[in-house]
Length: 131
Image (cartoon, rainbow, N blue to C red; front, side, top):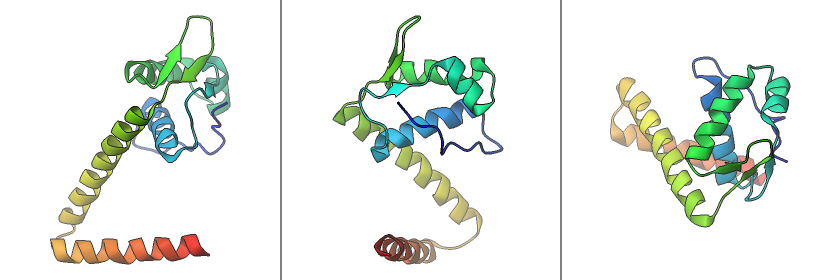
């Protein structure tokens, strides 16, 4: 069962998109795997304290992306393969990098300084993982 205990809503983004990204990122990270069962729409809406239509919209988008399979009155399951995960990883990273690049440019720093910052935080992250 896909675990939503770490799901946290963020202001400024529709909740259905947050659910979508949560599942996509979990698939890329390997915390959500092929065949994992999703909570029912009703259960998930109660768990997250949101309207069931919001969950329905997120699940519909996941179905359109081919990431879940649902049958009327039945459970929904993840449908992931290596190609889907690879495409998803590229898509998510592209969006993140575009957002970060735009934010860095808006601060007025040049590319060399931006790359130095990335190097610094990359190295800090590696040290944090060793601890």
